[in-house]
Length: 192
Ligand SMILES: Cc1cc2nc3c(=O)[nH]c(=O)nc-3n(C[C@H](O)[C@H](O)[C@H](O)COP(=O)(O)O)c2cc1C
Image (tube, rainbow, N blue to C red; front, side, top):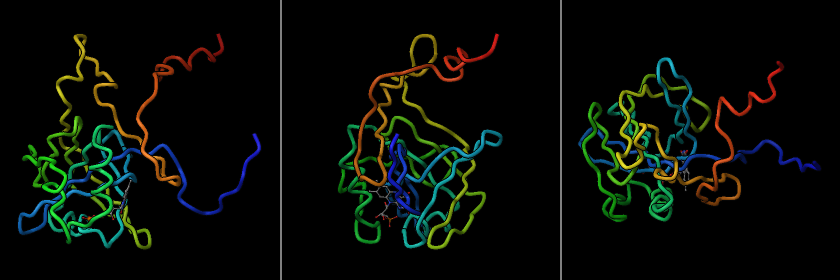
């Protein structure tokens, strides 16, 4: 495969499209789009979120030590994009987009009701990275939409319909088709 060097940059995909919900010390909630998000530990369950220090969301999380990562379904691509274009300092993004905020179970930050998968996190650590910080959140609860559960209890990916972000070319895509079963189909290369 002939390749072109892109130099030290941040082009990498796929990335998740998420809405981070947070609340400030006065009780005002905010939504922000984030794609630099991912699970970083299973024991304890931990999620990493990288935020520029200028974000209102960063100030909110520092103030209340909590945040919620809401998976964005493909049907909300335009709403999510808006939440990545404006700051909560200028706008009440939930009411502009019509998204509904509801109380979480264990943390102060709210859930997005229209998200099929919301992860409640408590801030446990911050790793400064220049203009950004990697915030580590302990996952304390997860809310998964009921419709996604099949009769055998397994979850159906298409019911979540996660919006995929291609960082570097700035495009949102949805999932295509299932290609393989993880932790199983690769075993065909095991030696007998
Ligand atoms: C697709 C997309 C992904 C983004 N991901 C991040 C991210 O991971 N971290 C970050 O600091 N900003 C990210 N942003 C930018 C913020 O969403 C944007 O600056 C937003 O206005 C900040 O809102 P706030 O000031 O209300 O927190 C992203 C924007 C878009 C459109």
